Every structure is written in C-alpha cells, then in structure tokens.
Image (cartoon, rainbow, N blue to C red):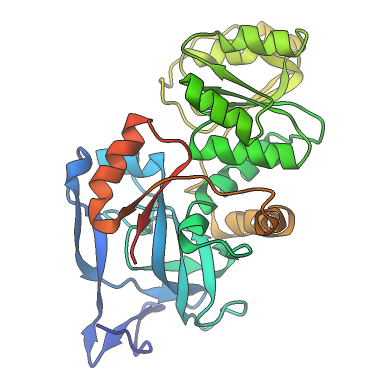
Length: 351
C-alpha cells in the first residue's frame, strides 16, 4: 500500500496510514531465538517516526555480527529498538520528515546507522544519524558503510586516539570492520597490521592496504608484531576476539599503547598480568555503540562526513562487498556470516 502523508499522531509519533488503515511493509523478523532458519520475511506495520526523525524507504541493509547475536537471543536490543526486526545500517530514500527535521527532504538519498529495524522496507532514523551517500556509490555499497565506519571511527580514532604515524593492529582484518579499519588508517597516515584466517584473506588485506597481514592459524601474531616493530609493539589494537588473545594483545602493545575491545568472540573471562599495564602505562578500554544516545552518534556522523566521506567520494576508500542477498534470503546471508568465509560486507537488498 502506498503511504500517504501522516494523518495520525500518538504520543509524539507519526503513523503512516491510508484511508484510516495502517500501511504495511515487508520485513525480515526473528520469529524466535535460534538458528538462521528463524528469520522469516513477513508483513508488518510500517514504523512510526517522531518529529526529530525521518522515514526511509530502504533499498539495502548491511548485515553485522550483532544481528546474528540478536537472532540467537544473546544480544537484546536497547530500549526503544526493534525487538524482532534486526539490522543496524541502511541505505535508501527519505519518504517522510518529522516536524523538527531541517537538513533532509523527501527524495534525499541517504545511508544511516540505526538501533534496529534495518531488515525492512521502511525504517525510522534520527536526523543526525543520516549521512548523504558519498559520490556515486550505489545503495548496496552505501548500506555497507555506517555500522563499520561509525564503529571504527569511535573506537580507533576517538577512544583509541590513533594519530598519524602511529601503528594499528586489527584482528579480523578481512571482516567488514577490518576492511574499513585498514583503509581508514592508511588514508589517515597510520600503518595497519591485521590478522586473518587464511593466506587468501591475508593476501587480500595486503592488497587493500594493510602493512602486513598475519595468518593466525599458522603464526603467532604477537611474535610477528614484535618482529615487525623491532620489539616496540603497536600503538593501538582493535580487538573483537577477547578470550585468549588478551594476554598477547597486552604484550603486543608499545609503551602508552591502547587496547580497544569491541567484541569477545572467544570469551569474556580472562586472566592477565597487571604489572605491565601499570609499568608501561597501557590503557585497556572498550565500548558498544548500539546503546549510545542520538547525540553521541550524530557527533560521529559529523566527523565521518567531514574527514572520510570525501575519501569515499573520490574512491581513495572503497566499500568491499562480499555478497548481496535478496531480503527473502536473509537466513542464507546469516549462514555466510557465521561461516566467516566472506571477505568484506554482506548486504540484503530490498529492491
């Protein structure tokens, strides 16, 4: 059903309706916690949007590991986010604007970070979390950007304070986060070392711009990093592994180095020697982005648009798309994500 202008307001939210009926959309929902097969494409009411939000007709949505965790029931969404529709990044066209929105207008092509609800034909987004699509990128390419670029910027350059000339180590170099971090660090003047799980993935990372890619299945990353840096270590480590990697991460840091944690795929319980942390003035920190407020995310968006969006528009930084699935194939897309066989981003298409 074609949406009309909003004609009903309930508790500050605009509901899209037509001749008195709430309009429907197609959405991929988590029917219950479980494996990829629990993802089903069904009809749902179109989402409401507030005075500070826009409604976006989604052309494509990126897939990320938090989506998988939410599907399994191990990563509940923050208050106010969609419980049954996953999806943290989208690209599409603005179809409606809230009363307080000043930057965007109907018809604008944007990509955006969202707290959930991205696997659908429509999604409501706070104005400040939207960004223009850089240059001539397609909706598919643009949908692969927000979650990874917001995450890397916030954790590597803000929290990790990586400066030009300092060195970075990224675990999972061929992941969506990894391919973004490699290119962002190189473009801003910092050599990036990465780990990956095969020679082919390592080769790809080096072709993308990594100073060195380490096959963690055949080499100890700590030994290689210390050799590459003449035993100095790296200035910043972006880690999504946790668990047994933690001790070697600490040993891989230079004096005054920063270890930034964004996931713990190998577990949250670790035992470490605290003495080098104190003696060498190391910082161990971390963050989760999804629960942060709109103002925090809007500030990241402003930094990205000013510093990195021109590099995407010029082609100096490029999206890396592994595979595109139609919305009805969401389960297959999650299976690929869980296999870790992909390089770069997996994207759902709603066109």
